[in-house]
Image 1 (cartoon, rainbow, N blue to C red):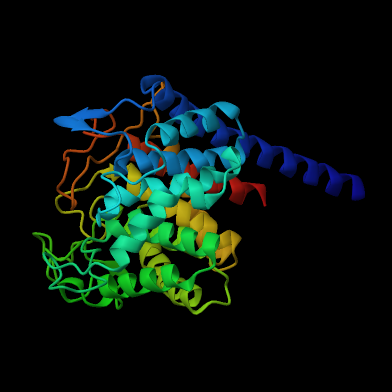
Image 2 (image 1 turned 90 degrees about the vertical axis):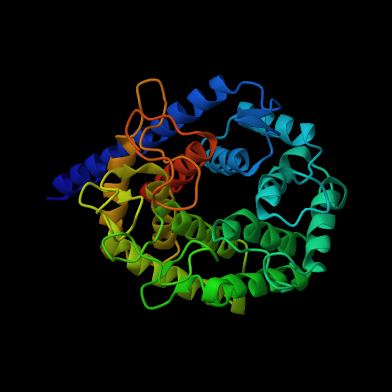
Length: 378
């Protein structure tokens, strides 16, 4: 009996190791494809017009790369990211005076790169910090009736900027960054467009342009998958740098749980979430980016003991199966919805369709797979 038990444990360990390796190799394939295609990280993007390579779509890719680095430490990842940061002088896109969250997203990776360049954050992140200081003193006159905290008028902005504020709070110990982020989050949650978070359903309306309740043609509420994915990922990234004892952590944790419960109900049997979370009338096909971000959040939540393994692990396993089916033989990722602001953007989304930007999709994919890898390692 004892030998049989030992044999079973060995077999289980071997199976777990094999599963981990499968996840890692899939993430590596997606990333290798991207790094080969965009071998020079300093080159601007050219989708309809030229954009510098520290725009938000590319910044999300680097978030995924840093997540991959945590489970697959390779010097080439560090070199690639540092070259990118150095080229952009460790600065927000569009300089110190921008108040656009999309311009600030790159700062999250700058912070994560600090240990690899071994420089003082005061020097290396001077422009990033100056930019946050500028925003904290600037009311949004144009889009939020002068609200001091009214810059995040679309929910994607929560992911683009809020974790950076929390990172700078962690670095400096100055609570003003945390407090500004929380007040901005609360403004988006409770006031923007009448309140972007539907607490009763645990899901987010996209932005101030969609006055709740915003509905699909079939009369069901319209909750965009990737938009909700951005918020879900932001909650994780913020809680990761906060103490569980802090009021801010506890507040974000409550919303994370509400979202998790809602998202669990929206997953399809094949493991995917679709572009419109509760309505399949117009968008019945799988969508990769939202699925990856939900895997990221749920895998993290289980590891933290916030989500019950028995309840959420099957959803994670199914999501991994879905995401594995997205990758082509060369590493290209299918089912990737292009940029936009609602389920209708970039349609039709298919296994072979090419999105206008693919960098953020790869970033989402790497975030999801890297966190699931860590879940398997428990």
